[in-house]
Amino acid sequence: MKSKPEKVKDLETLREELMQAAHVFLASYEKLTVQQDYELRKSVKGAGAKYRVVKNTIAGKASEGTRSADLLKALKGMCSIAYTEGDPVALAKALTAYAKANPSFTFRAGMVEGRVIDVAGIDALSSLPAKEEIYAKLLFLINAPAQRVVTAASGVGRQLAVVVDQGVKENKFK
Image 1: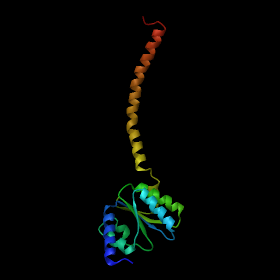
Image 2 (image 1 turned 45 degrees about the horizontal axis):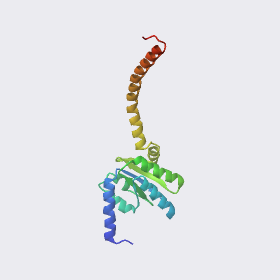
Image 3 (image 1 turned 120 degrees about the vertical axis):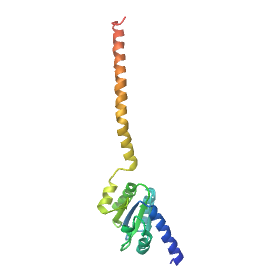
Image 4 (image 1 turned 135 degrees about the vertical axis):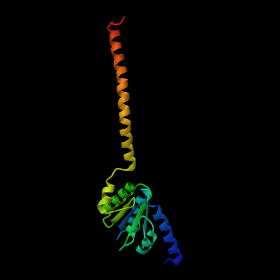
């Protein structure tokens, strides 16, 4: 059992992490084995996020004055939180994939950019493409008109060269 100073230190650490976190997902984790918990933490860490199992009172106190206060103030039952400063889509994809493989892990709610979302919102978020994929599509769309202009401009010169070459071969140009 932790002593009071250790609990206060945990509370302050969680508060600092929640202050920085822009995206928070709340889940229920009943009946997970140690191996399943290890796999969950590994997938969350791979998404660039953090995962914690915390007492409801500590989560409520730590969230006071943070963006996640509305989400974490009235927790009931066994709860865990996953949070990140980075890409919420990557975290939502990792958690959703894990929830599909382990039905004992269920979502309760989430917070993305200060807005509280429900389970349907988390599923919708997890179906979005990753940030890198969106950037690649955007760069392709920006680059496509420039490629078309270059192709059209080089096409005129190429066609002129073909006509001159045919004229020389047929001795029409002397």
